[in-house]
Image (tube, rainbow, N blue to C red; front, side):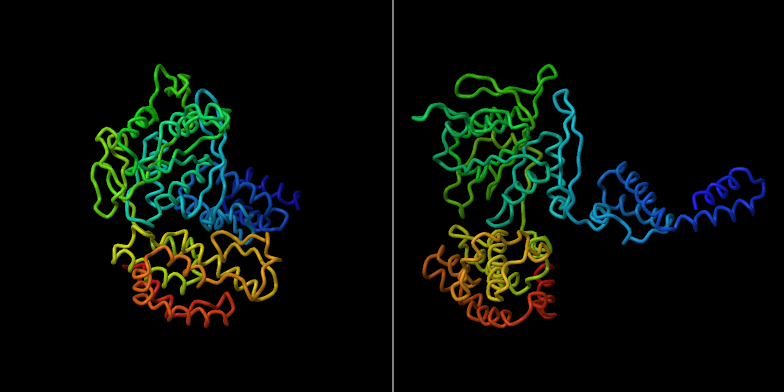
Length: 439
């Protein structure tokens, strides 16, 4: 076959007749559809895609054009190319110039990183801007920070801010066990707990920043000011409690709160009104975060668990309406917890052991300990919600259950228990999900 191809290529190169050349080109294209040549075509397509960015529309446009030209079926593509085309989570290697060194980082592209807010925050990370996310409880602020860390391949160090947050936690200090390095210093210099370089970038998450004592917040200002600063071409340095200066490595600051830093929200009594200098550290990169209902349905519940999504949405709305968020709130995590618990319950009840089915759950179930779980005592989704309701006062609890028809939800769960896992959603439920998302 290679001999025939060589003859046709020679005719195309040497013939003076356009008709003969066209016919030779046609025959050569037909020969190129043989199984022997598909591999080489895929190699060419892979090479082509490796030279373009990660813009989804650009990649799809190139792929569509190339598949038509090469007459290759999408089924012929390898797993990685399918992942790029279909938008499934995929990992890419990105080369970064940092401190005169060339570093290679693995970064993840998935639906979470494509969200508009995450794209803005990734842009801020590239520009070394500090980011502040604020919004109501359960809107996914902390989840967004974790998404950024995962996407960048960075570690994440969290300071849970409150009136008791001390200098020890921020810049370090002496303890009865010896010197303890501060979390800000560790994140700034990409250090582990012993002060050794990790070789990985770090996201410093200042969770619930408005709750920190304003006097203590002043200690953060130096690090926040130096997150993007260079002096004489070198990254800025930060002094720890020992007086040692630590040079900044790959360092990105994200902070969260339920209100703006320069105001006090009546719903959140623990908040302090912060100094304007702290707010200024996040100027231009302060974003209000709202519940992304479509993302929760498509990417957390994987469009598989409509009855859970509908009830949890009702419960969330009622908690907000009654202003009970100071006690507890419906977050991405409680939705995940309810779904995962129900998934395990169903598989244990079926007596077939756990199966790892990624399409069912955002986080596949663990095999550990499942052999010890008895069918009669396996935890149910109702158990999960009862534990959640305990976080409220007795009067609040009863009101929430009544107004969201918790008893009706129990009956729905009993009905769902009799259905196969891939047949849980009804047309009526899916219509209701669409209405929830559209609001």
